[in-house]
Amino acid sequence: MAFLGISVDFEFFSSTKRREFIAKAEESSEGETETVVENIDESGEEDVEADVAEEAKSPWKPRVKLGDVMGILNQKAIEVQEKVRPVPEIRTGYIVEIKLEVPENRRRLSIYKGIVMSRKNAGIHTTIRIRRIIAGIGVEIVFPIYSPNIKEIKVVSHRKVRRARLSYLRDKLPCLSTFK
Image (cartoon, rainbow, N blue to C red; front, side, top):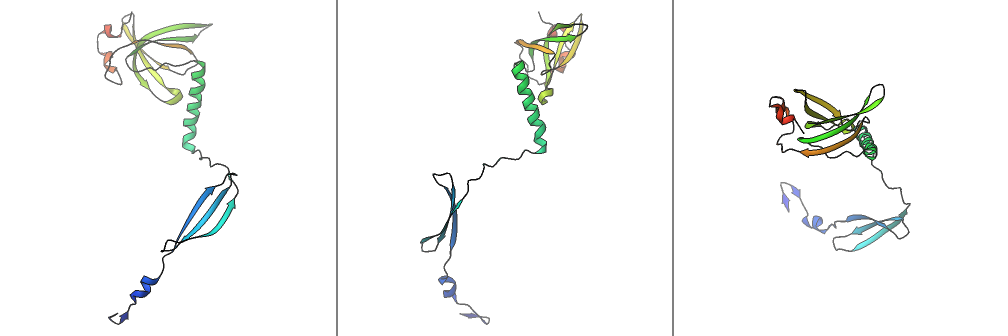
């Protein structure tokens, strides 16, 4: 066929065979990895070209990124602290009782009881804000949950709340922050 002075032989394109190569890695019973390369024609015939045995390599370990190091250290510090003193699940609206060791001339235990107004999750630096009415004055104290000075955290009860932070309790009547 000639078109604009160019002759094309369609039989040449149709007669060429298309060849594909497939490489497979198979593990033998001895723990060695074998690589098999197969040659597949259009007709579907397979030719095995080579069987190559490679030495078994050590398993691949993912690299720890520099940004993940602090997260890993935080997680390990939390696990160590959990072994020393288990921390209950604390949410906003829970009424908790915290026994805190106060360093004065000698160490004494001080008990704080109040409602959890908010919780700030920051790994080992996780804190909770507790509100309590003392002598008619509202007092809020921030406690780090994983502090070694805290000897015990006990959840007394909980109230139904629908917010993550109960800052509106500052403007409400003192009876909402008083516990018996």
